[in-house]
Length: 266
Image (cartoon, rainbow, N blue to C red):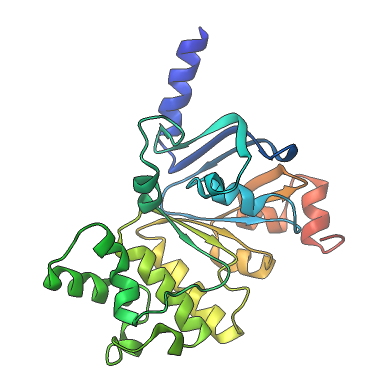
């Protein structure tokens, strides 16, 4: 088979996945932090990235919607990332549209210093949607999907900073949902939350996977076990192993994975 035919076959296969990461090396300046990462992420599943601090999992997450573009001298030096078969670094790709399609929820909840309503409506206004009835409907739908509507429907005009930490994180998820992404990236979304708020966010993640592909970076292995369909284990910038979560936790194929899961290092 010629190289061009191999490439076409590879691209055809990659369209079967929401995200296809192919042989990616990534560096910050002279410091290489990802090494030949190959990973396919299926649609409408939850994928968890686990591994010790500094293993590259958050860096990889941010490559998926090109958030690393905002950091000087950061680059993918080899390989490519495809979303539904399209190379995200192709010149035809609009980065703003990419980040609309691939939403991001950060470790620390980051609501804007605005009302609850304005937080959720923000992305819609940026898109030029001005019809109040449409915006009202989207705000309610998004807050409902984020399991927050019943808690805030009578205080939409209050400042978002008045919400609890868990509510703020769900508000940020609602803000992401409002612009109708297809993929949601979550970087340690529960690390700053108490157990009750963490449980609410985990329940939300499980309900959202019916409509969205979700990738979650977490240090909490119990959380990965509870919420994810598949788990990828990283160590020193390399993907060591990826499999169904049950297999990773009960019968990993690599000793490094077993040692990490069993708490021998981390």
